[in-house]
Length: 251
Ligand SMILES: [Zn+2]
Image 1 (tube, rainbow, N blue to C red):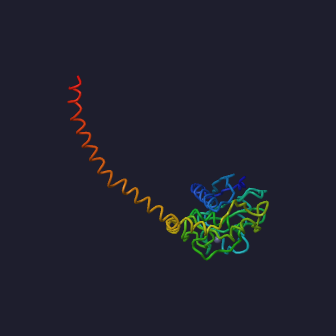
Image 2: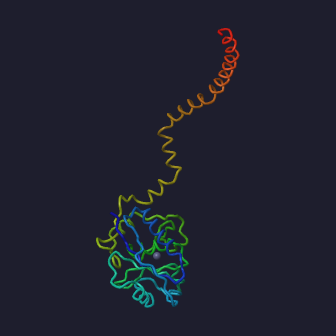
Image 3: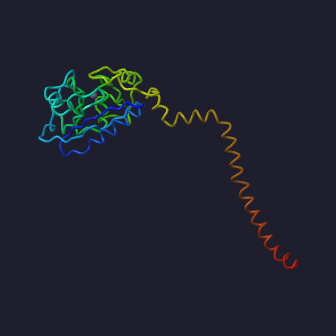
């Protein structure tokens, strides 16, 4: 049974793109065969400019005073272990561009820029389980710049999946991390997806059989077909000419 993670979405009033981010989050975790369903438990536009320009810099070991205050004021009180608050800000000031996964104790959540690509939410949520580190590979979900990812969907290393399974950072869900079902290393899965090597190995194994089959079909399809249709036509014509005479004779 899939683990349910309930999301509390808060965004600048009038902004409508939150569902795109949630859809991408679910899609990415499905690719990694994470046995988890993200459900929107609450969704609210925030007026008064509180989520207009947020200072999350530096996003290293703790949230800034501004971010901590936003989580305390906007995330629901008494959040359970299976809940995540998602604060979308119209823009982030400072060097933090797309988001930050630093949140105060008791309010597990992430901050994401409305200007970020939707996959930034998956990246930040993964931070909650993996910690603040980044991967240098631009095809990895944990590459620092979500807008410069070279693969869609991106990959996660087997070690990262293992870390997700046992994640103990910030506020881990009960049981210590997400549950993955039959998780092969995504890098291998990505390689398998590439069509060229798969075809080559198939060809090698069935080379002789397919060659014979091809020849058979070629002779069946091409040479005899023309011959048979021609001879059939001739036979039909001859039969058509012959029939009425015989019929007349009989009658
Ligand atoms: Zn990051």
